[in-house]
Image (tube, rainbow, N blue to C red; front, side):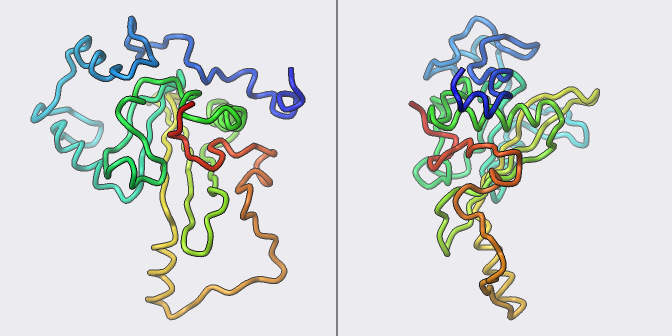
Length: 223
């Protein structure tokens, strides 16, 4: 065990490599395959298009669900409780995203969605969400600068029985909303000489010394 592991013992309990199957795992497929999603669709005979799906508070077609999720003003990522990356909303081209992702990453264990240096921090965040220590964890991307305020919100998901079912990650730039608010209220931002800004590490100084789980590259960068 390294000194870093001793500082983050939760990383020993959280499998970011998705080695075990769970009740929703599509078995018999190689998770790291670039064509995982195509193989999974064929194996499950997954529905698409104008087929209706009954939701807990609505009835939509698959197409309508895609329209809805792709219109969200933030990037969404779904990783299940086995730490397998299963979905992101296809709201814009990869190069324009704050945390660029691509279809070939779908199905990967989330360990491969983070650079190695960020995995211990990611494991600690997931473990806090899994164990109920946190319902939501917010991280500011280091080096945002005056024109950007990029945030990653990691939100625990649960089923109707309260069982942990994975992470809903939301990524967005808060600065356009801040600028809109200042313009419409006639206010402005000023420096607070008494504040100690956490501009480099984000919430790591406030949430049990958790390292930045995405480092500076976002959760989409593979090895």
